[in-house]
Every structure is written in structure tokens, then in C-alpha cells.
Amino acid sequence: MSIVLLALCNSLQAQNDTSIKRNNTLVGSINYQSRLHFFGRVDSLSSSGLFPSIGFETKLGIYGNSSFIFVGNQQQPHSYAGTIAEVGYKFPETRNFSGNVFYNHFFYNKDVELVQAALRGQTGVNLTYNNKIVNVTAGGDLKFSDRTDIGATLGLDHLFIYVIPKTKMAIAVNPSAYLYSGTQNFTQTYRKRQTVAGLPIGGQTLVSENVQQFNVLAYELSLPVVFVAGKFNATLTGSYVSPQNLVTVPNRPSESELGKKMFYVSASVGFRL
Image (cartoon, rainbow, N blue to C red; front, side, top):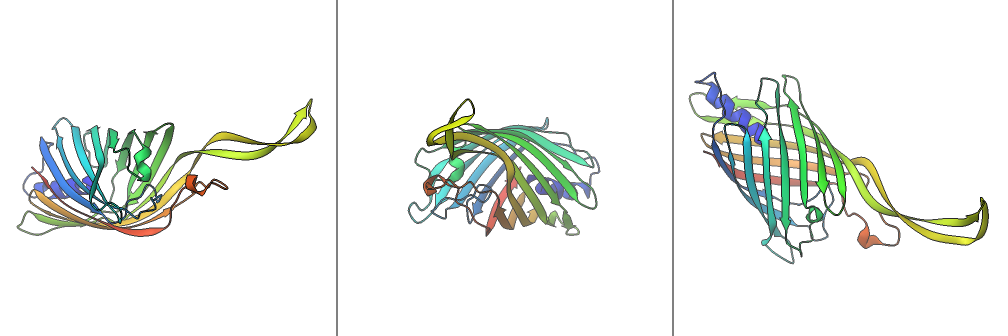
């Protein structure tokens, strides 16, 4: 979403200045999501989330921000769940290319039941090729928990911007489609017959082994609508996510992934000073 905001801010600035430069910028927002999920994977409590966020971007492209997570559900309405801290670097923007490298560290409370609370950190890179037909975003990342997972993202979007004449206000609509993929770690159990010199002897025994597979994790469609008025902005997004390749563990449903296709809404209000 920051790419959309930057595009809007750049469009407003370009009305009077054709040489757009990066500046030291204080950013902040309050964000709401009607259903928390991790690539369509969910907890059993149908949790929603509220995320106040504050950060600083330097004119050199280095940035840092923190988001404070408050989870709401039937058992714990509006309880503090943890903090996500991010540092990174935004590449100099050109007419067609933008991107960033980042590292996130997660400080979740021990009793949080969110699926993503198993993560301790994440690092990655995102690159976007912008053109008049469709913008293409590709990303890769490493997710750190008790094991390390590899992730990859591919996204397509088209940004429609309308700058309100003689004002510092603009509206953008950014229909988007994303494919998320990555490795999944799980335990596979099967029966194996004991052999000697290739000849079967005795009965079968149960064998468990750790398996890591690279799969498509989810498809997602979203329609962000962004309004910018000077240094302030507001966003409303409707999204539909379809999880793929959910891991199921036979006879151990508590260890299986819980997920479903769902529509959810995100909203935010923020500033860039």
C-alpha cells in the first residue's frame, strides 16, 4: 500500500514540481483488519486486528517502523498481542522500477494463538516494474521460526489515479492480484516393512520424518481505494483470499492447518509529514 501512497503523493507534487525528490519523512497510521490470517491460515477464534504504526523514512532511502498489534476475538477483546519492528532500504525510484529490502522482527506474547505468532523474523526483497498496462511485483523472503522457510510472491496491479484539480487531494483505485508460494515444514508418517538384504522380514513399523515442500500457499484479490489530502491519507480495501495446499496430519487434527476461503476488509487512516 505504501507504493500507492507514494504514487499519489508524487502526483500531487508533480502538479507544481517536476523534480520529485525523497525527503526525511515521519509516517504514522492506525490500521484495522476484519479477519487476521496468514496466507489464508487462521486461528479458531476468528480474530480481527488493530495496528497503530509509526515510522521514519530518510532521504537516503533507509527506513524503520514499528507496528503494535491488538487482537480482538470472543475470548480476548482488544488485547495487546505483540510488536513488529521493521528496518529496510528503498531503492531509488525511476519511472519504471521501485523496490526495497527489509528485515522484520516479531515480538509476540507467548500466549498469542495467531498462526503467524510462530515467526521470529523475516527478511526479503521486493521489486516492482511499473508500466501503463500492468504493474508487476516480484518478491522473495526467508521466514525464521524453529525452522527456516523460503517464500516467493508474484503480484499484478493497475493503478488508477485522479488528482482533484486546484487542490492537494487525490483518489486512487488499485485492483490487484497476488500469488503467494513458499516452503512448508510438516511431519509425514507412513508404514515401512523391515528388510534384510532386500528381503522383507517381520511386520511393518510406523516411521515419521520431517518433510519440506515448496507449494503455492494462497491466491489473493484485492481492491484498495486510497484518498490523499495533503499530508493525510485514508484507505479502504476489500480482499478475497483462497488458501492452497493446507497441511493435514492424519489422526492429529490439532496439528493440521486451519484455513478457508474468505472475504475481509482492511481500513486505515494515516499521515506523512
